[in-house]
Length: 460
Image 1 (tube, rainbow, N blue to C red):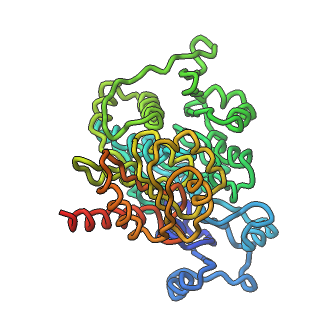
Image 2 (cartoon, helix red, strand yellow):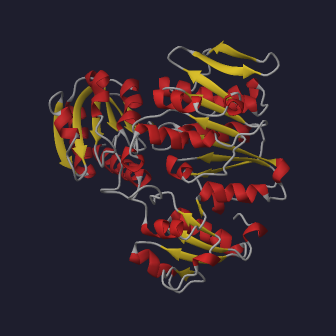
Image 3 (tube, rainbow, N blue to C red):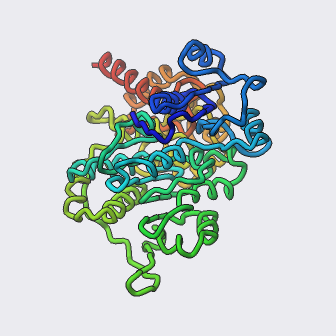
């Protein structure tokens, strides 16, 4: 657990006591802070009612003595839909921060500051693969590191490094309140239409992503895939000194560009195929993921041979195109981490004769982006409490069933593949959030794997 004297005797109000809020409260309390808290969920509030933390009461709270309000990532903090406590805090001129700015505060006062580096990766898709791959490369090259953020442990629950590298998977929600965060290596992988309900527009979504570069200093580096015009336009609004620190990548034109400081000119380089073979890193999306992991590792000064050897031994990410069963006529793939339509596409491109299980809570309405890959699909089974927009889209194009329940979907799809004369891929790639039926995509993926195990064992 991270601790720091910088938080000692501070009065801190934490809004949202989920995984992140709970982690921050425990860390700051151990650091000597006085913790106040609030969560809209009465069950969660009651868990902490008799704890060492004090519950928020607006009438009795002296806002003049609150040093800052910490807002958990899932809580809206901007615009007319901002949480009411956030609005009260703003009226009282209270400083509002998020997890990553608190972490920056810790880093600035850390006794090991000069021996610590931070890698931060954001983007709509691919974040977990990239940070996990970087973590694997560093460990294989015997570099101390800690993988935290949206993957692994919450930042403040992680082991405190005395030297080495923190690798952070960062969401746009975390960047939304960021004012101080200044990672040594900042990366934006891509931009899709995810979370528009939260941000309001793609422009605002892109601008929140671009906050990851806002505080880069002369010794820090950035890298961005300019796959969307809002990222390209937003990058132009960064200061010239920061733009010179950011490597720009264009996979469609197959080059990357950077400012050559010794020659003082913008330099372009062709993206060369690595030739590194790994069955867990197939597809164009993983070609991009590998490029980012290599480039960041090179910026860290790791030799290419050490990077390549590490990538060859990478075993892939659980719930991301995870092969869970294979025999003569069938392979079964768990891709539960596909939580939007864009992240469903890589799996559709990777397989043929697909029996697709999808559905859940759609994050947007752009399902038409699947048009180019619809011919890969033989049959569709839709789960989730809401059949739209999945049924309306697939039913016009391919044989489609709305089964609602994942257990029923697994039984039906295995029966259909068994009766088929050709080789088939059962692909569980929901293309939607899981919260209508599961706690998260991990629980959803684990449930799928249990169902596959029980149904394939019974069939033998």
